[in-house]
Image (tube, rainbow, N blue to C red; front, side, top):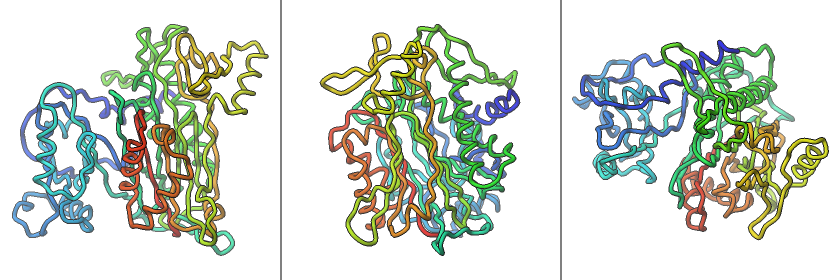
Length: 483
């Protein structure tokens, strides 16, 4: 509805901030922040290069340290909770300067943990190393990007009833993390979401998604900014019960996101959703019918964060990004891949048949062609190595549709007799150099060695680069254990 779209736009407007100035002032410790909107557990903050970011960073230290006396009781409580398990050398957000760049972004919380600067991971190197790394970023032009993660609040909920199947435990997410690298490409066109959505009916939901953009960032940015809030609104407005609520909300929020994007392409090919802060509305323009605009794949997972666990995992996939459920068999040495989504590639028989049926019905669909480098669809002067993705209206009319596969997996049944279980979402920057089995075995080995999910994601990106990937690389990892 128009009301829902306007509400989503108001909630997401802070992502669209263009920072024109920097001011100094009192330090803000983030008291009383709104917890009703989708909450990112890992995010990238973009700052204008050459200007102070306005963040107050610090290592976890003695609670009696005088430098923390200016914090309110609420801010101190958040700081203690976020840093109680901190390793020496980890750096956290303690506050931010009022009216500074960080304050204007409106996304920070006390206790957010610094995880990277630009393309470089940051792990336990200490405050001085963090400052040095930030100061060595380019001082003029462009932006400086800092990676942060934060603890989930949904794990603090009162457990709901736990459902068992055949006496086996349900599953819960015990660690989550993501990393992305532009690799050998000049630009980063991928997007991601790793958000928790507060929803009392389902115990809260973790929404994870990787979006492999092409021909620009408009599509991947639009999806990553708008989808979480649309998903939340669908959850809140649902009258259903049980696991079907999450599935229905994910399907509908994806369809709405795609419709908004396609209707928002202007004559210059700019298709990112726009927001009028004065009128409080999201508006779109219709572009030329033969316009080639930015597109994106999507592979998305939604899972209840009920502390008592869940049996159901919902997956949505559109394109050739992939989600893999992996776990080591307790007995034997069989495959570690329990499930993987289907790539919508031009050499996939289901896609070839779909496109052929469309052409037989008189639709102006492209038919897969072959070359030395693989199969593709020709659209105008462009070759597409996929059959489904979110595109502008013209490319969609050629058969590259945004219709997604949606799958429900019973985790208790699927992971019976397995250990070191994880869910991996990745774009083809990883998958063009590693098979699902290779990825799964690496993830299992790293889980055995005690690696947390964010460390696994970083290492997979690093392995892809070492193996010669030339594409952007984005990976999300969720570790699953018995509840």
